[in-house]
Amino acid sequence: MQAVIMTGGKQFLVTLDQELDVELIGDAKKIDFEPLLVIDGDKVTVGQPTVAGVKVKADVLEEVKGDKLKILKFKAKKRVKKLTGHRQHYSRIKITSIA
Image (cartoon, rainbow, N blue to C red; front, side):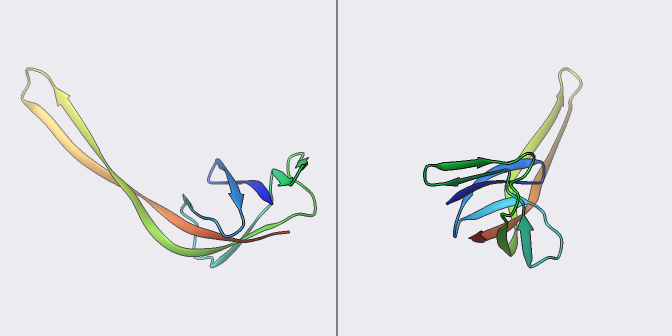
């Protein structure tokens, strides 16, 4: 069984026992999502906007950091350059049930 969930303004296609990194979730240890679409074998159910009666449950495992991005600002012929970096924080979740 697969489902499409929405979190942090992004949509993810998830299956049972899958781990994925999503936008930072608060202090919650367990979270429920309402799926936008459910695929069960050959049967596909599309929600308007969500599928009624179906919940996707997930456990929040930990907070992780993404890859480091380097940003270089440079002005030609002015001897000006500025290098900064950024690491986005994510929550790693594990899908426990789709029912």
